[in-house]
Image 1 (cartoon, rainbow, N blue to C red):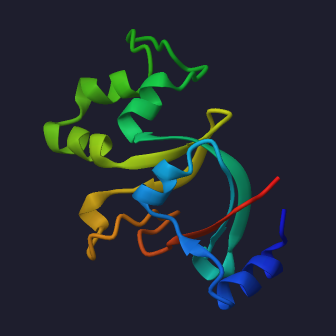
Image 2 (image 1 turned 45 degrees about the vertical axis):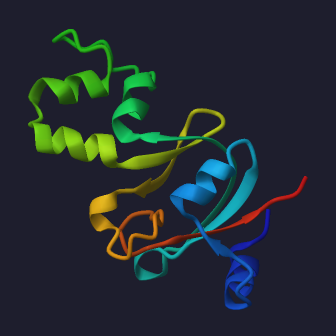
Length: 139
């Protein structure tokens, strides 16, 4: 895995791509390394294999968490959300896409069309203006 400084250099040299919905879907099963510019220079890099791109609601429907089933009988977080959220809130959960690593863990990379002002399908981490840059890692 490249260091953060190496990823900065690749970004400066325009050798990293912006991660979009289309590119992420085409990269399923491939290893990528990402660069994310965080708040107050809390920048990160990570390397993983893209397992899936799915709605946030479906991710939490299939995620196994120790706190479920809960005392109210909800089998998962999605079922709990569906018990109290209004239709607009649930629509947001259905429309928000997340990238899931091949080991089932969240990458914390998200996309929601309501924040896509340029209709470009770009993923973000943290704030919606913090785009995710990537390169494919060849083994």
